[in-house]
Length: 386
Ligand code: COS
Image 1 (cartoon, protein in one colour):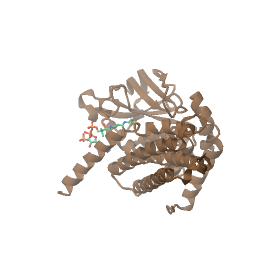
Image 2 (spheres, rainbow, N blue to C red):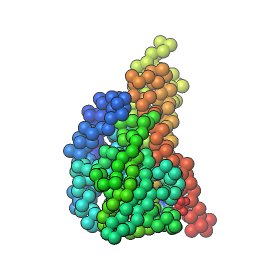
Image 3 (tube, rainbow, N blue to C red):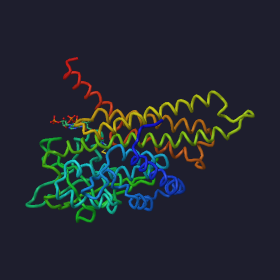
């Protein structure tokens, strides 16, 4: 379908597709097997300027928006979700600086992020604060001109590999969510170390690690925004990133669908290619319907974000839920169409199905997304006196 992308958007999509096909597809199984961070691919993405897509031109980026980022993420996800996750988590970690950073902070960090010289990670989650993001325990205590950070962040994507970390910590425990603040912390700061590297079901080439802060002193100017704004910064960051998670779902599902389609044309049973059987055709048709619907939604939401809309909490959550639940169904059915072959590591769909599961979990579970959408519906109904 023609989504009326402009020339630049088509160029970005095609560039990401080319990198995905030439550099990612040949190594994805090995990276998954070895659980190895895809540094070589990250370097190719950096050389191709793809890290600067969403960074304003004045800070060395290309000044594009959510839609362009979604196009790149979709193409990478079509080849390997672990690579796409490492790339997209970099944007997630950058949003606090982009949305709320001071001019000095932007000048200091964004140019290196735009060139891909330094990778970023976002640190919100803790052992007892996953869905309940306001339940974080990590503290940041002001001491003269420094904040002292103490606590442990868990399951942080790009943990250990990233150079720059945007961290949410409590500056005032007694205020709960309103006592949270956001900080930028650099790798190598004394008192900041990395804990265990997780072994995961899917996206195994991406890094998921603990961040440990033990009396870690950072300069006062590393506070992002102002004290007490941390929870809002985290929520706005997630609002901005969630269409991108939707794009991950669309790309991953597209990749699995193409594998299933190719297989169904080649696999002969009962004397015919299995695609000639209506049962298989209907499964493929359902995949095509769902992928196209999700893509249309994700692009529409991305365009809405780029339109300068102030509030897109509901729309981002809707795109994330719809596209990622879809990706779980489509990858599962791709395995089903391919039968025993689909279940074997020789084909990429078993990995795609394993990878898909995380999309329903990270950046807010799909149950939490439905809560968010529900809360927004209540607000809208009250406002419109329904
Ligand atoms: N944009 C702006 N402000 C927001 C917001 C948003 N999207 N969501 C919440 N807020 C504000 C609220 O308006 C409220 O402000 P006031 O204190 O001024 O009233 C404040 O933040 C607290 O909001 P709320 O009461 O809704 O917080 P809850 O503790 O009930 O939690 C959810 C809300 C569940 C939505 C939140 O905890 C969440 O998103 N959890 C999932 C976290 C997540 O995605 N984790 C993934 C790991 S990070 S990759």
